[in-house]
Length: 330
Image (cartoon, rainbow, N blue to C red; front, side, top):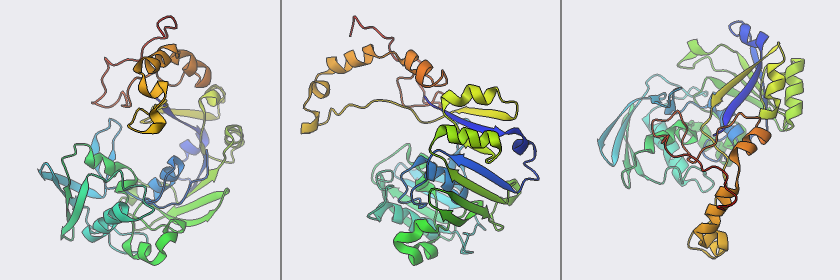
């Protein structure tokens, strides 16, 4: 499993309460800042500041309400969401049940949407009253609400989305702590504090500037020079950060993982030895030395795994472990 690695300037951490601007070095330039059409992780990172979600996970992967204030499964295919009252979008429009229905329908039906597969279990959404929506599923789905902890749960302003059409991602309007100010491609994205944010007491910066820096050495150099306050770093730079008294390394287990997938489906592309003979796939797995890969490529900071579930999750199965390298058996 991968770890999320961030490095930060200690002075920036120490003065968070009085600091006005947080400058963040990113490992790429995001795609469109539209929760419906976005595809990239870095885009999600920016939109998390722009767009609150219906739900989120806490540090122990428990589902917690955000824009939703609660929920109830009335039967295995019907869930009723209560929407947090008094929330407004950055354009001043109210975030209500109608806005939630509009956004979920947009996710599910827009031709350019990348959320359609995530919401494939959803049949339709009904507005019960101003703060209540009922979602009916095609079939029972235990992980359905967890879908709303990511971009599928980000709610957009219907008025702004209708006015902008396909260009909504160029000037997004959501209900997060920061509102969109400007974007210069390959240079920076600037967000400013939204004064009408429902949870404003927990926001301690007036401005956030994201600077794309694809080269990891450039990100590290900018961090060391104080040109950014926080940055994504790669595992091979972790020791440099640790040895610099001005910097602090922040590390936490991630939900992501690196792996290799084989096509074994009922299609011609899978008509290969690796696609049709499980012995070939098993030999490939036995030939890999995960420990060496992690030590050499990832500086010992990742964890070998045989499942796509974080060790923090209650669904993690500790008895399922990756096999050790065995060339003779392979």
